[in-house]
Length: 87
Ligand SMILES: [Zn+2]
Image (cartoon, rainbow, N blue to C red; front, side, top):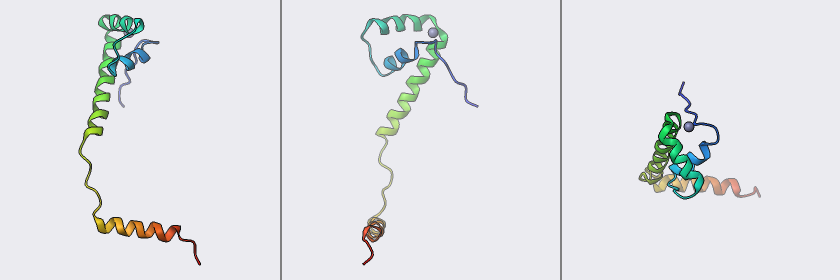
């Protein structure tokens, strides 16, 4: 069972925004200060950052091998057949 890291209440939205690189606003300034003194929120913040990095990696990963032309043709034919109403 994976451990769920819960930040302090009311902090999770600010942590999410900070993890996405947002820097402005009084609320985020407060959150940054809080983070320095709160291991629980720091842990949650690190978890959010690494999760976002994983998502980013998945987005920038090279395209998986695509189906070759013959397969596409077969798939398209099947779709066309399925879409054509019987006469
Ligand atoms: Zn906290």
